[in-house]
Image (cartoon, rainbow, N blue to C red; front, side, top):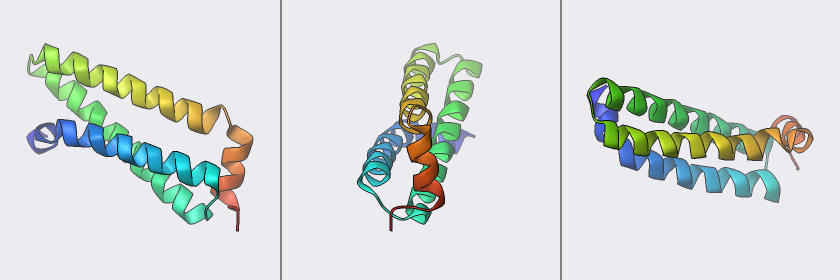
Length: 99
């Protein structure tokens, strides 16, 4: 758990990069496999961020915990916007792709 916590800011940066890539791939049109892989990467990075938030608050690092919590909420909000609000388009992109 400490190893994940030591990589707290690179995880946030990786999530941002992966989110931009998944946004571009999802709406530009790519194969379904690429879209699924980027979705899995985003979900795994959100889980790592959640673990960092829990670890920060359990070890009384409240200032860092609050910053990580804000980043986590922004990430979940962005995922909600990209995948849930455009659900019909997302289902098509993740199942048959745009080949």
